[in-house]
Length: 301
Image 1 (tube, rainbow, N blue to C red):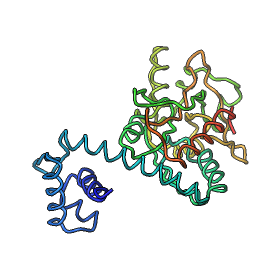
Image 2 (cartoon, rainbow, N blue to C red; image 1 turned 90 degrees about the horizontal axis):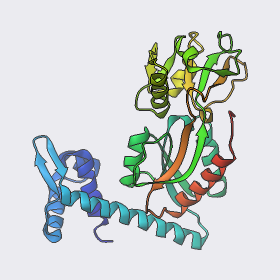
Image 3 (cartoon, helix red, strand yellow; image 1 turned 90 degrees about the vertical axis):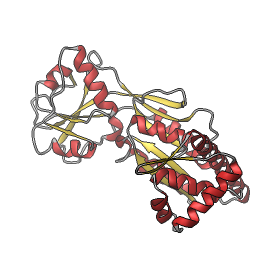
């Protein structure tokens, strides 16, 4: 326990890549920070940082120490959560890495529902692409991840996997809006707006297009799913999204149509955490709630 503050200082230096910047972030003088870390290195028996032209970075020994620290901090949070439960306080914090599609409807509803029963629990919600979400799990920066079609790594333990058909988002007066199911080639024959390459939906679209000898050629490419939903109302283009991030507008200005599974298999909406990690109480309970909600869900809200 006596080294927790020192570990936090070391993590701040690793994050900032600079002793001076880390000292500013942690509200400590650079000389005091340097003395603290050098003293720990002497006690630990090995240096933790390599000096590079623009600052410092963790060396292999430092990386091992950081992994130990993050695991210890996570375990401490879990025990603190259990102690809070014993006292009836039900406190804790849950950090989530998630795809953008979770933001408009699903996560706000689920977090509010959880906090209605556990008002002492706080949340951090970080929008992350598939690869970065899993990196954050491995670094204990997020407790759980909820992402579309993640790149599987051995460290990722799946709690729930729910199929999500890729949907076309169309203005109600679009020529394809009257069809119940769309073929991908028909969508690509019209102007379209698409997520950029790091997102799961785009990965699926690119793969499916190659299978039929086509390629995406979006008039707009973006990191924002919100922009996609709004832009189709300004120009008669087709957008793409999974149903968990969609809700039909009251004015009927948009329609959503599934792209045929003959062209594109459903996306996988996957909830998980780092393999082998015991989640803190609040995160574990929230993950159970999400699992039940995902498995009960079907179609477009």
